[in-house]
Length: 206
Image (cartoon, rainbow, N blue to C red; front, side, top):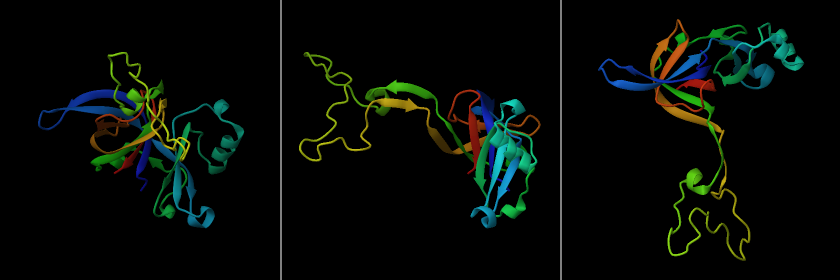
């Protein structure tokens, strides 16, 4: 079975559990996802399936991708992702992955692109402390010393500095799957998941 499904983050709300406790949840419109390609050890060197999600007009599909979909005999889809599987022979092109496959799952890992924060300084980006605010100090939000003297006479790689923040691939692990609505293709996941509204997310069985 394919342990991953693609979906769109719709937003957050709250539900009540069996003990009448309020649980904050993220609503994800997940699937249905169609298997658009099966990769095997014999043909590709590894076992995997390619799943697609989201409708797209044919006029918005470029020629290479249109040829790919036509060769596999499936309708064009907006998003494609590859998922490793143990035995590719169990799957075939055209199979559908739905939220019903997650009905017995309790925890999931969610991968998405975090919200972009733009260009930020070290205080917001890396939680640096401020400098002295009095006695003529001009070092309120400056990053401070960034390198050494004669050796190595350069700034070391990976040093925490100001720069672009957010808009990166993030995976949040072991989130509780509170509820699955197979009729409306909805998943209610406890807590927050990466990305803004309508962002693409990838939900994997933990």
